[in-house]
Length: 401
Image (tube, rainbow, N blue to C red):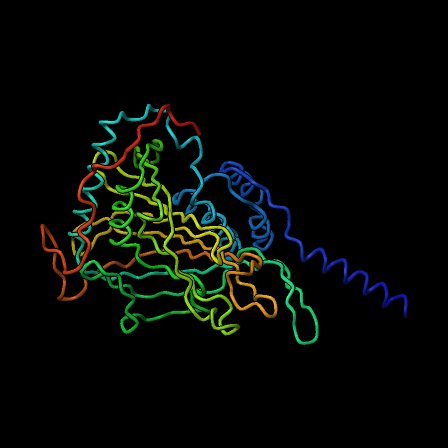
């Protein structure tokens, strides 16, 4: 009996040690992902999900490809894992097959494109009617391996990859260029906790005017051409220093209740960079990324947002509105060692928060709807970028990917 007990303890320790270590992650292209999923077509849902959790994309998985692959998944677990994999790739470059080798525009042509973007942003924001939309959010988190000191000893939490921790479906009101979450009108369908630590907001007009306005004060360079089923897109890269930034990274809260400092919202104006994908003929913005450049040793080490826009019919007219949003944030959430009072002085393991958001069910906001045109701006509201006279830099050579 003693030998059996010893053997059980040894086996338990071996299995525990194996579980505490994250599985090796395979870095793959979009094509390799499609090939792997085709080979796994007859496997159970849990097996496909586990394989997806052990992958990392080196290229951006487009929304169209994501929808096609998601429809082929054997079940809910695999679908959730696929969405997490795709959302984690939104800041990656697209596959080479989606980037035509066309010559970049010269400085004059690029300046004209930039002017169209400015005109589009100013026109779009002012003409967007007061509206309601449904915002469906799926919140993901990972769990880093961590040793926690308790009253009777140390407890080790094993590593868990990104997994769903909650869902919510709420009504968002966009009125006079302000985005408001109206709890009274929202039939809040929530399953599990709401988006904890990461809040998604401001993806309607505010982000367009803020990012384009900041970019005109920062640096804009040519990125690349992209092609999809709907035609050819142009992409500008932009970079904005902190002193010209209006991007505020907020996070609430790191282990609330441990110390007073943890009960407050992390708030930091950050330098940032990203991409603006647009229709070169009209200047219509189709996709935008925002990646914060956080100082070292901050509580929040990574923060970024991806917004995709598409045509939406509202009241018999077609407008360009957000249809998809991905927000990602990494924060050091571990408790500080005993005696340390400031969260900024402790770097625990970084925890990832990811929100996958879909917008839909657009409709006018009752009888208060009015079209804002010309100079009919609401008081104290930003008018958006005034011109395209920005420090655009033409590329010295064609970009390669």
